[in-house]
Length: 106
Ligand code: HEC
Image (cartoon, rainbow, N blue to C red):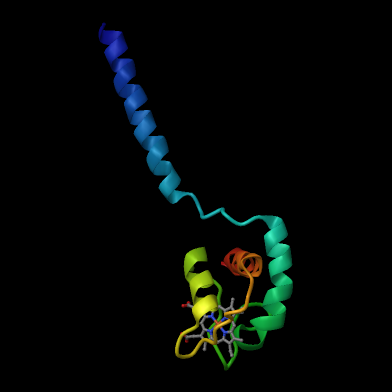
């Protein structure tokens, strides 16, 4: 009885540990084929301002190590803001690809 209880507590703690572990996993929602396709889109539409390698230019900040999320990038590219132009006609797959490419730079 006592042993069983110990195991139950152990199992519960391990479960919690594993569960929380996911919070620290890097965001791995992009796939290599998207990153590859995204490079072309990035170079065509984004590099002029954000730099060929994503380190920025006089026009705009670099996109590396800014803790960006996919949702944030997709929304911003789609809708733009006061300084960032919008790409309202960019297809969902192009948005997925270019955001994957930018995330991969992080
Ligand atoms: C005409 C220039 C221009 C082009 C082209 C452009 N951007 Fe931007 N972008 C900006 C400017 C300016 C900002 C705002 C930078 C700032 O806040 O200092 C910005 C901001 C951003 C940010 C937010 C950065 C942050 O840390 O908050 C992201 C992400 C971004 N751009 C992605 C893209 C992507 C992806 C493309 C190509 C589809 C693109 N941009 C094309 C000018 C441009």
